[in-house]
Length: 430
Ligand code: GLU
Image (cartoon, rainbow, N blue to C red; front, top):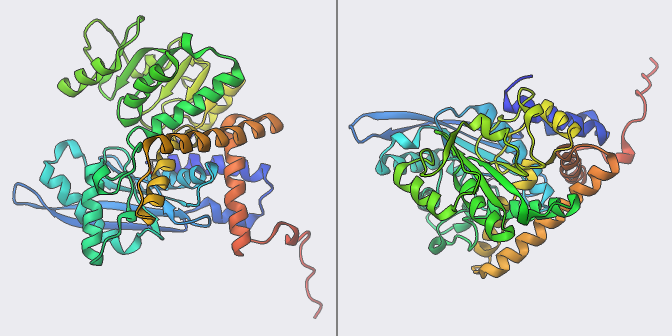
């Protein structure tokens, strides 16, 4: 099977399209981005050299509302990754039923090799190229891999400077004092917790006795470590990052691991732990596995060896389609990425609502609305999974694609269901 994420995203859509009996034209519309932009922009480096960077912004589908999705700064960024991620954002916003479409952006760069000044100039340079293509009612970026609230602040400032007026709603995931929302920082992980709680309820798993392995210790993984202990009292026995992982059967304290990583740059070498590779971590005999880093880590090569009862995909695209089938057959309950990690974009949407109304919500209100949204989304997926007897990702696709398809039909971008031509038109007699 291909490891091209966009080919994977299209294959996933194809399966749902066939279950939904989508007509060919609508299926074609949903198979490709509606717009994509490739940009190059010069940046003055500290050395005095002017370096040209490349970036993308893909606006996959806006039938349900303005495009929405993060910007990644990654040395191996490709257009196909951004296309796939923008498709997944389209399904994600539909699944949690917020009035937004899907988009994604990326800049090919390694933030670890950039000074703070260079990072700011890259962020501003990118916005100068895509600024005329985005806006609160058009396309609203947010943080993603290796981009931060501070970067969002620079981007918002650059955009507002281009426009000559304030427009806080152009971007989400901003710092709190610049129009960011309370609760956005841990929203991805917190949203995931609500779906894990619901999954454990239907599977009758006692989370207070559960063991957990977390692959990836960025924003999602690190917050998940804190929250899974705070919410359920589960024991996190393994964590990892891009340099490797650590295991301890007695469990890790999240504050101590976070401090250690802040000091050393990695979880590797944490005192009192045994080393473990990222690959071995995925195959641990734990109750809950949280892939929280990158795409394509659970494939047909290792799916057979996944022992977790629940896989909560806090990362985007960690499991490929072959692995989905194997996991389902083996009774592993997968909470698919665009359900499990939808808390981030849900609180981004709350941020947009607050910005549009010059309002500020209390954290309790954010948490309450996030729980309500995630729980409803979980239920809609679980019902379809049960009714159609399909794996969770396919069920999530059926719900999400069905909603986007309906918005397309209602706009007149596709034929209403009852008007579909039933047979080939009879050729005119001449
Ligand atoms: N980057 C996050 C995601 O993949 C959040 C997107 C957003 O807040 O718009 O869901």
